[in-house]
Image 1 (cartoon, helix red, strand yellow):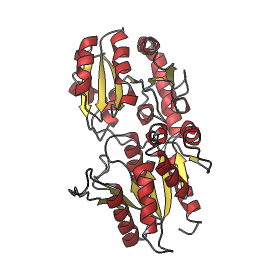
Image 2: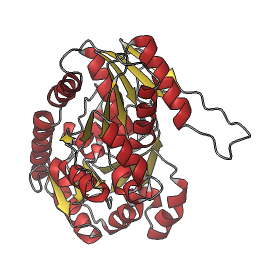
Image 3: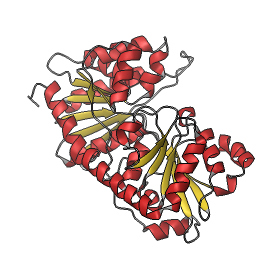
Image 4: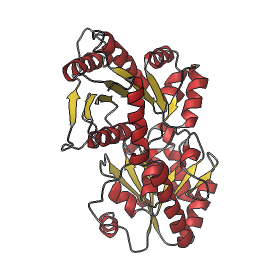
Length: 375
């Protein structure tokens, strides 16, 4: 099949998932075309059967704000026409689904690709409550040939907040880890860790929903056996949080690495992962850690309980309870045998339920379904 993929190319779960999906589809023989304003940050330059088509955004003086939706729709129509795309698979409803609907209307009957829209969270839980966006989101979803969400939680929230009654497929996120370029010991030396020092990892785009304030408060309460460091793989600006880290007395324990495209070597170097979000549709960072046998302590919000089996493959605590999160980290740090067993269970769960071999065929089946089995 010939598939167009549109996502936000910056650091974030939706872009990571879309990029991995495109590369996996290409490995399975499909022709994949990424359409966005920048090349997705994790997209390999050497990927076969994968093309990138940049959207040029013109800043005309006539417009107070530069427009992205119209140039995106024109590029989608152009790529669909030139490459006879079967499917436009867009990640995030606005502006991507609305642009895809407009692009399809520019093409003649018989040359119009099917539209699949995948919701990742914010387009439902935040923009879905905004009167300036909700009608456009509902329209884009109604005009899509199929709609998917990355968790059952997000499916239910989409129906509740947007009043969507159409069928919604739940297709979970997946992760296809690459072989780390460095060993665990080499990576830990690069990070400046002492032998036996605990490494707690957090990865996110540092948006307000990620609640970095609670993350730092949890770290400030930690009384681990031996010293520890917090590694932040940050997709956003860490500077706004530096003052709070200093106030809590943990600034010297924080290591920040920004815009990391190959995360595998850092996950294999970590002992535990920590997530304190107030809302998560899935939390891809937890899944990435699971594949490397690194159990997570997380707040039980949104779709996270669908990813982590509490007490078996990780530890979940009530939202906002930083004391409980700190205790969970301390208990796992003090009991290496239990931590390793939990890590093995996490890895097994990830491979059995959230691997590319499980998830990508579900997308392929969806594409065949919306194309009527003809593609």
